[in-house]
Image 1 (cartoon, rainbow, N blue to C red):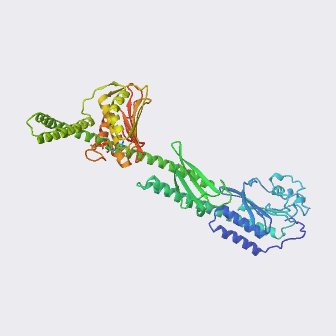
Image 2: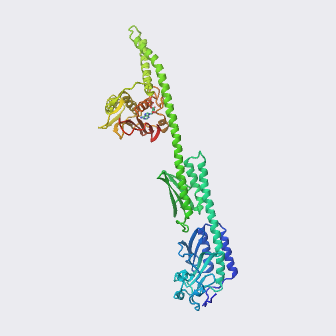
Image 3: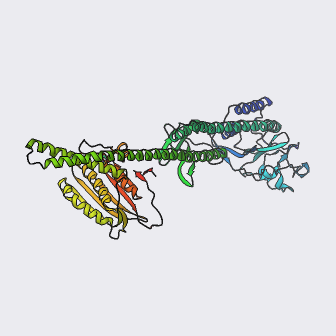
Amino acid sequence: MQKVKKKTPTVHSRSTAEFQALSQQVIDESNRDLPWADYLSKISQTLIQFSGCDAIEMQVKVKDRKNTCEVTKRTKRSFSFAIVPCALNLDKIKSPGREAVPGADRPDLPLLSEENNAWTGNMRSALTVECPDEKMSSYYCCKKMNKSYQSIAFIPIRVGKHRIGVLQLLSRRKNFFPKNEYELYENFALTLGPVLLNQRSQAALRERVKELTCLYGIARAVEKHETDLKDILKQTVALIPPAWQYPQITHCRIILDGESYTTPGFKTGPHKQTAGIVVKGVERGVIAVVYTEKKHKLDEGPFLDEERHLLNTIAGELALIIERKHSESEEINLQAQLRHADRLATIGQLASGVAHEINEPLCNILGFAQLTKKDNQLPEQSRQDIEKIINASLHAREIVRKLLIFGRQMPTKKVRANLNLIVKEGIYFLESRCTKEGIELLRSLAADLPEVVVDQAQMTQVLVNLVVNAIQAMPDGGRLNIQTQTGENHITLIVEDTGTGMNTEVLKQIFLPFFTTKDVGEGTGLGLSVVHGIVSSHGGSIKVDSKAGAGTKFEIHLPIPGSAKPIAAEVELNGKIQRK
Ligand code: ADP
């Protein structure tokens, strides 16, 4: 080693035992399972305290990570610590060889040891000297140091022959490092290399285990067949914090379709990482991971590249799960629709069969009752009774007629017609009833409504059934709005009221024959079944929007003949398609 003229040594030199204690402390810290940034911060601060330097810079490239950390003394007890992008190309620094050391006869110039460590106690004069191979040398690195430092130590950190970093000790004072400490620091750097490598390996392994545990947990949640999407999202939210570096300060929130799922007591904080949940090209939501406290900067703020990757993976997984759940529920829906359609068809057939059977005896009852009524000799009481029989039979015949329409057993007579005319005639008979019930009747009929091919009597029936229901739904008056509109391939008849509306339970059942919420005598439960039967037989569709307490809107779509695009024959209840 070359000699450096030591002026006034300003720190007393530490013993071998003190350096051994320092090494031990660094090893002990590495066994505390600290996150990587915290470990670097910890040992940098330990070193600055131990050395008494004004600043320390440590550049390390361990396994997958390349970090530079800087600690600067602010006051005796407070330090600033930061991880900044690596400025030196560690792989390129090599020994210039003893002969390249400038000013070997000048004690104030840098001294290079065998290990290519550089020490200087007087940087200002060292800077005046040129070095032949300076771009590659540690001496050059010393020269690039902040000029406010006078004493600089530049000690490579190695694992075996492989250089994994550089430790720089910086002091503003001249000749700060006692000469006998050079070797002790260099020995310490020999311990530091393997310790850093071990700590990083352990930390990387822990991160990987956490990541796999999180993904496995999500896979388990999905596996449970009965678990629905909401449960999966709730479980995912709980699985995320333990997979991040600082579980204690990590919160998570998933927002999907405007609904939010969060860790208990969720709050935002200084650091946030997000990933969008994109299902079939549409961003349906977002996952956010939040640190509620400030942490050292790493790859993406304080977050690791691995955490970014994990978050993206989770968002991708959730998107797939959502897509799968969606097709599952669509399948269930479709099956329910088929069952429903089947049921309606069977009931329709049964009902019309029964209606046929009843029709004949009913006609006999009615015919004979009317015949008997003609007898002038009848006592008054009998005449009244026969009148009741006739009325009851007429009522029964009306039900039979409706059943036959519902079962599509009535002969139809379809002609080209303008629905506006049918509506005008139909309303004519209902107007007086509306006025009586305190209902304001509004109509808005499209001027250029195309003709449709319909059975006019049946269409009147549709209108009457919808309007009667609307009137009955507004016992305290209200507003009834009847409209016709022209669509792309269909025309629309709208009957909208401001009445009682329906809850979901009722809405689901309205097209079932005999389903009624009305008192005996007020409703047969066949009105909407008939509407459904007629509209279906015309290749049309029905849309209902209803809200309990807020009124109901029925839309009947009928195809425009010759239209290139046929309309889908279906029923839609509050936006949900019920049946094809
Ligand atoms: P009914 O009117 O004889 O009960 P419907 O088949 O016409 O039979 O109607 C079935 C049920 O649907 C009614 O009992 C009622 O509960 C509900 N409903 C139909 N239209 C309306 C409406 N405009 N407002 C509120 N509820 C309605």
